[in-house]
Image (cartoon, rainbow, N blue to C red; front, side, top):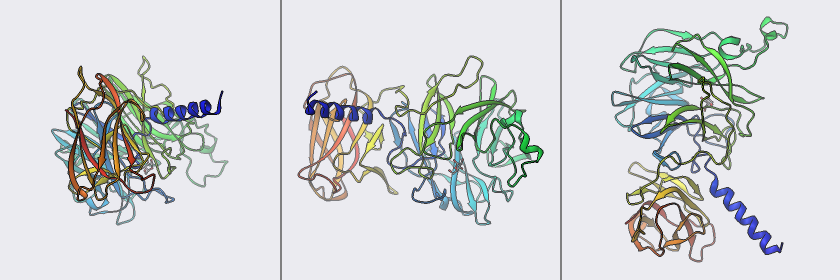
Length: 466
Ligand code: FUB
């Protein structure tokens, strides 16, 4: 093979690998501890917000994004942070949101000003907020560092349960108001039967009885509690090969006894000590949400949400699931004749999310970057025009719209002039330069007029075909 052919083949292979990637599902920021919620035909994912560069989980806010097709995710930014809770001081850790009677309850955990971990709850009329601390104080505060990682589920009879815990797993019955509870906090016994093993107390001498129990697993943290086909499931972060794995137990009752069922995800090249996940059914498929440290610059303190589809075994048990770069397939098409926010997409390169009190948009756009939007359904005829809402303090940026790949059929080119400022938005309208119809992936490719790299090009708010 000639050198040129070899190079072209290598470039094509690299482009294919990059453009096929779908995991992690956020690329403009980190998104650990994913907690998915299905509501009104959409999946909302509530996550933390890792700040890499530190040697611990010093997060300060939580985030949410959503999708109705499982591949194009709309970023709703960060509706709550430590500042939303007067009693919180540090460590905005794992959380989960649930809907009841049209209200959304987002259970979070954080370090308190008394220097322990506590669970609080924020409430909103919408899944994306604004949220407000429902109590002005923690819901669960026992003075323990175990009070982390709340998971919540409302049973068919209306009884809601809150499970949580690091080191040990606890539950309590929530009242109908979802912001108070009745009865005692119950600690689930940690045995070989419940969680596949016993967590050995620190500094336990080797001759101790506990030490001789052959653990298959151990409950560490991150419970995910739900019911499916009359069986209750408790997924949790267990002990894998030197790092956390995802394991699960099952029960016939919401309060146990629990039976350890095995490991779901273990021994994966995830580049993270922790794993933390959630499971949902959506549009006829079952999905496992988890996190890895595989985003560039990521690691144990820079984790982002990934998703895999799986099928339950006939007896309701969960198969083992491996991480993939490709992630999941679309379960719906996107309508390009509606306004689509630039922060709705399947993959982002060389650009970032901007969030102000007023709006969310894509910023820090650089030459060589792009946004990929999957499964866009143009219908039977070629659209006539393309609109994009853009702001640029300087000229020189180019927005190209391509079909199916970064270098695919060119539909539109916008040579971006100065619009009067980086937040002075203008709508640009172009005629479509190609003939096409049907379902395609779209690529918004960022280029520069005599700008090869370095400088920011423009801000991108939304787009639409007509
Ligand atoms: O993200 C901080 C902590 O790491 C979570 O609360 C745990 O579940 C682990 O993922």
